[in-house]
Length: 270
Image (tube, rainbow, N blue to C red; front, side):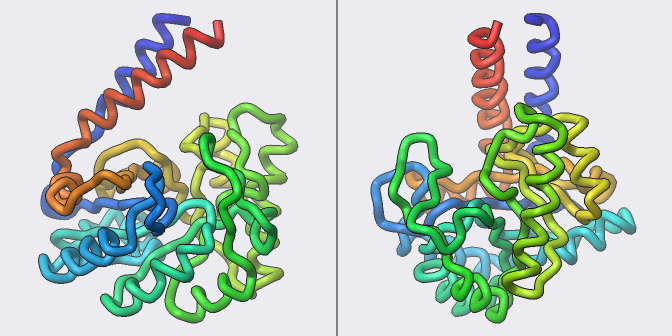
């Protein structure tokens, strides 16, 4: 077990750091809110970050465009970037959308569909009582140019549930999005970044075009579309930190932290 965990940790220490010509970085957020919580980026900070992307001439791609590049193994444009949001918090509509529209930045929001339109989105380990989007807001975001992605029905760790439940979560989430919005979601995001070969295969067999992880690093044109790396943007990221994350300066540190967390979890599970 320890040897296998060490091998897994080694793979997580391959962040493929600083992006070079022809590669892509995907960044991800959870909440855009002024609450003092690691998963909340303040409204002003988010506005500064999106303005920076425009002032520094980043090429912002939709995930549809990302999938097209990967399918053709075509190099990405210089300074290519994609913006994503996980879970489906209400502030993605009330706070993030106006800023995205002001800067004309496309983005994708991954929806945990059983909680959309309810009183609470209980997906953060240390924070409860947060409001999710409702379906009217989701439809407005889609009409405003935001892509809709699937993030399961209930946000389970897909590698820790039965095969039947795993397939149900992956497929029915997209069916609910289509039922409520008419949009056929092409992109999937693994809850908590947890997946294994069986989960990856189930996502592929469900017909999605891409699947996104929480593994840090960049995306190359020859990468598999179903284990795409991303960079997390946190509450305490100053604008300088944000710039460093864009250029890959923190990729190896983030990979080390994630590998250590998995080693600790593996030790507790023995």
